[in-house]
Length: 501
Image 1 (cartoon, rainbow, N blue to C red):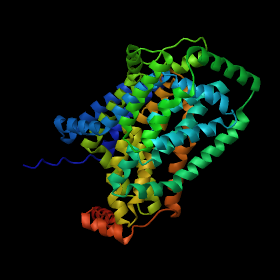
Image 2: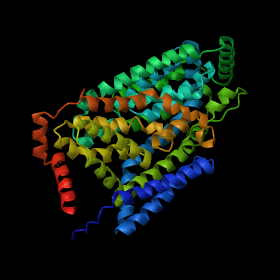
Image 3: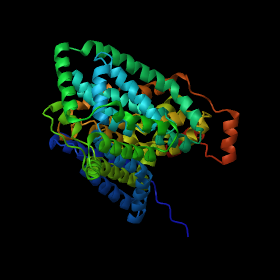
Image 4: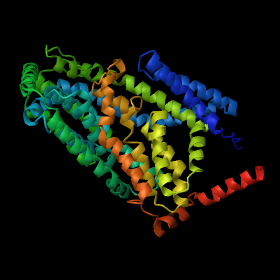
């Protein structure tokens, strides 16, 4: 017995639950002056469920849609748990303090921002996870930046630029594998096609960070006094040596050997625990506490205490619950047909390739904003826009790049998105407790928003926008892929208008 197909909501009805949810979210942010999007998103799920019932959807169907999308995001939950564990354990092992200590000695304030972005890019390419990079090396860089007297939002912007640039081009990254899988292109062809937008974006970002670094450094004596106080506090509280950096080296080595992300991160937890026992005198019981509850220290140096009192699985519960709720919201929107109705209304108005590429990138960004999840933004945009790219005879490499531009790179710029929540929580930006000044990291993560902008420019100019080869078109036909003739759609729309008139 086939299930009766439910009617698709109109554009107005599809937008209604999204607009009402953002109204509730805005009320909490600007009137109640608290930034916890969990409850507004739960209310959004309820509003969408009401719309779904009006459209004839059963609760069982909507629940199935939510659970399906949540299941897609479960690997991300696993990574978040491991990032929390590795952060707490690597602080206790002296790994993060050692990185801060030597970083303050080796780096100069003038080139620090550019070096931070570059270092995070290298580590993220190696690990294949921006979240793991932010929670480990990124945390250490926040300490170094504090020692140099650089505002936290500038350091965070550089860390995010580098970490998510590396994630985007790493063959080990889950999103970098998801985009070509959804669009049906080869992984390494996809990575090569990312370079025309990604490389200019990161190079421009590095140039800006260098210029800003040379103009930002103020009182050198104050910086040296702050650095001396931080280093003295670290030496008094930890045993620092090159041996305590060993967990970082081995974890990157495992990643380069192409081990999966979660086993690599768990090996980092184990190696960090062994280092804490051998060099810091921690007990196994204490390692378990650090992995679950995080590390606690009182050195009397505010910069150290504010930076190193963190980590553990519990520190990620805020992010994990937000991720699960956001995924559920995206799932119910998709099951009711809201996302499809909105994207199809956009597709029907496309006539040129520039508009198509802009719409795909924008739709991926919008899904990131609404659903709070980069995986859904990549998967949904890839599925919905594929027939239009094939109809215009443009390579699906353009679509796979568009989904990553709006999915992977924009994710950390949205504080209630999974990526943004990881950044804010791991780097201790304090946005959720009222320190909204640190939201400035968003425009300062230059590589993340420049790349989609460059991609849109390429779409309108035709640069680096390959047409589908005969081989690719033959593969579409062989696989029976859907092809949408855009001109035919517009002709049908015009004929319907004439008939009504």
